[in-house]
Image (cartoon, rainbow, N blue to C red):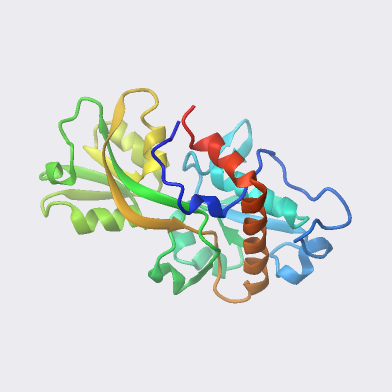
Length: 267
């Protein structure tokens, strides 16, 4: 389905297709922590609380009353490996990427297709990279726009606070109007309604919007972006180490490839 996605750093992660993620027994699995995760400084003892900006398909979205997607499945597997329950809170991306949500103690980890950047590392601690992504330009199928240069005098939609927004502002013509939306839930409908001429965001998300045939990818941009799971800057050292251990174990076991193929491989 998404065969164009790079896998160079994707192999560094994890996965399961289970829709729930509580530990199965009283003894933690290898690589897990003591019952309740007491050593991990969790917001809610015994539960891995994950914050994410939903929807952002195929990374996080709701299906049949459950949160699913690449990030969600990875986090569920991590919770299982640590013998923890799994809980999700839907939050705004800007508050998550700024570190404010995590610093406030709302959740233990942010899993929201978040690129690791030096600016974000000032306020957040990241796991090892688990995914390598590109930026892309989505346009109507009958559009003449084929590059950023073609956006001269046009409007371009982006998601607020993302690396896609920054890339757009750094590279579009001076007379392009860059319009920022809170999330893809507002961004994509703006393109559908003709309120913007194109949208620029992560390739996997834009590819998902091409499935009906009304929109197409006009261009892809190599930006050397790597996704990481985000943690509070202070007090999260044990949890970061535990998550990285789970990432390594899942990489070795092949579970990561199973989840990756579910969301990104050509069917």
